Image 1 (tube, one colour):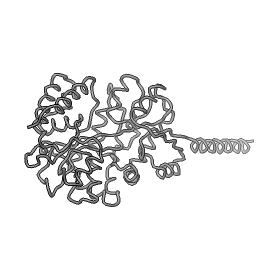
Image 2: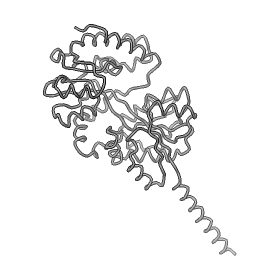
Image 3: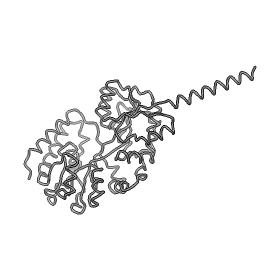
Image 4: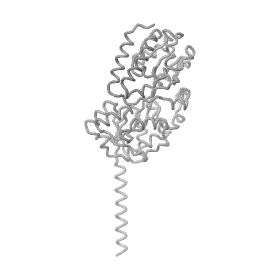
Length: 359
């Protein structure tokens, strides 16, 4: 009978719907990420909203790439490598798949960060990464004692002789190059031009040695020098400056005139991931400002979520607003992938600076 046929059709539809719900509720997103980027409460709320279970594996750049390389991009559905660790591994190992940008809510991202990350993770016209968590190197300044320090080269002002600090690492070379009016990242593809640039920076750092109290290695050493007043200005990271500001109001992080140096940890989809839709849902979920603010609270660093800084609670919101007005955010110099051979050149320069006698 027709009525019976209709009933059977309805029953079949209901069964299909039921199976669909079961499948959705059983869907799993395998995420490999950094500590603090997927807090338990955020994961629980995502699962409650979407029915998708999230399996979180904590890792770092080296381990992520090693695991994905070993499996040809299998084992995980979403990874979070730094943006300068995507292009090279993708060209060499093919461990990621291109992103479908139509499935990402671009309006939730800070535009300058999104565009910078897309540019730095593009291979043969395809984008492989979008930004998530970021941080910077810039200046930590005691404004009561060194109010005139606004850029990296100001650390060489004779007024602060013996009272400044920075690391003898590659970020210092790059930072000083920018402050000297050069464009180091644009020289990456021309080894001779980059070597000439390093030569100019080397001269500046040798001349600046008399201003350096100590080249800091560990965070605690720098913090102690600032707290004791031995160091009044330093090149250091943003969260370190804010941490000092909590009990030393005159000390804070300053984004330099020539631009803070920025790192970004991204979202990238492994080549053999099996849950792309779940990955895109997670990306769009955690980039909501109110969710991103919770990740900042857990990780200690800000995200590329537009407006999330307004959702932060406590003093960190004020510290961020003071250190990073919109123009300072847009002026961040994001690290691009490093071509082979450059770090060897930089290491030789740093060795010579360390061995030189300062003025």
